[in-house]
Image (cartoon, rainbow, N blue to C red; front, side, top):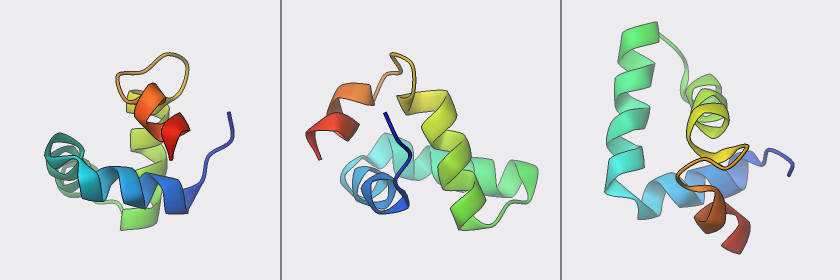
Length: 58
């Protein structure tokens, strides 16, 4: 499975939990949105993550 910024943005837009988590990651680690999205992908989507199925469906 390949990382796609566009897919991650859509996934975050449709999930209140991920949207909240994105803001937390950006604030906590002082990251720009693009880097925070990639971090969320690796923690919440990739390798059987909670949102993997939703990501693949996009």
